[in-house]
Length: 339
Image 1 (cartoon, rainbow, N blue to C red):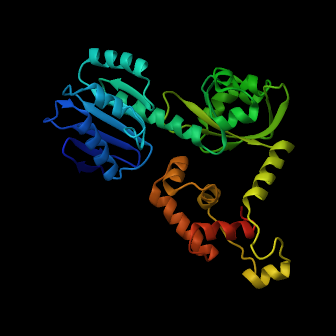
Image 2 (cartoon, rainbow, N blue to C red; image 1 turned 90 degrees about the horizontal axis):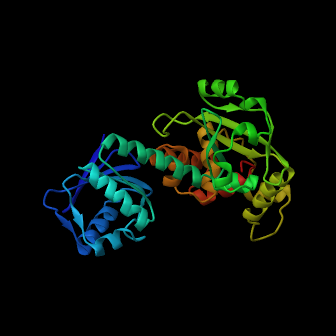
């Protein structure tokens, strides 16, 4: 159910953990810098969340002075927002606004619309790609023709390309002509539901070398994409990738303060016997993200679930491992080989 929040100048309606509609009240005709500062402080005080998709309804033609526009374009003015869609009444206002946005270049994704359905669809699409970019795994997005429409920084770093060099290429080309990405196979992938894990493949790096990878495919949820697309997670199976994973684990696993190494007997006396813990599939996804230092909100964004769901799984894992805090949970999970 939507939740409404009322402030002096703006009425907010929160539809889910990301989407917030902000409507200026009829008493508002012109936004000055003091008013814009109060609006931002009110929004932050309401604690609506981070990385918000905000739909601003400006159908009454509220105007802004130059000082307020400078403030709202600043980092402070955009706090907590990842994308903003502004709903205006007239098509001419939308055209002029888009022109001004190209000149001003705001720090967040912003666009103007005359249709609310289009504005909401654009916000979801922008948020989806924002989440892809921040994801800890290497991710590619492929459309129904097999063409890549996005690649996050992890995928670009793994393959040695810039995003501009990857977007527009086909998976058939990137996989060096593998039949798994022929037109017929792509149609089959798009018609399947759930996750599909492909046998080990080689992807063409910018250097020309083939990198052995495991690919996991799933359809992009309807409404999060402008067209039918597939999300591809790329797991590096090369020796370099495996060594990097091991090195990272060694660097992030602290040694006990008392001794640099403990014998098996000492560990038994110190911590007790290792328990066999059964983690659910969702807990297996959440545990490594907690280890990376992500908050419940950030994990919820990565896994497309609610903050409460993440907190419930976190509490369940603490109980299973017999610990009381996330740091203790991660320490014990590493000690017992679950990370």
